[in-house]
Image (cartoon, rainbow, N blue to C red; front, side, top):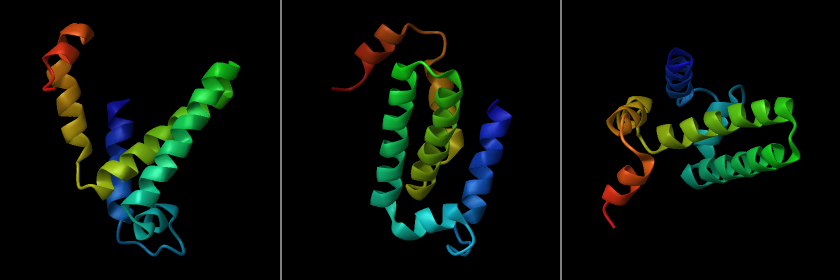
Length: 105
């Protein structure tokens, strides 16, 4: 799975400078960080709705859309996917409650 996400992150990065007329990803970048974040939020809400409705196919599709748009937001903020995976690795093996309690307030 991580290979697929790393490949997607590379594709998103490569399309940052592409023609917005021919690339949806480039069009998102051209509209700026706020629009990228807005699209991520819309997809996250659609994912929640699909989860509540209990439609596995819709939830799967919306989850994929949400991941894609999250990765666009990260790329727009110049945060590499490897930083996210490194953070996940750092948290691995510890209780979620303990990790959350250790975060700076």
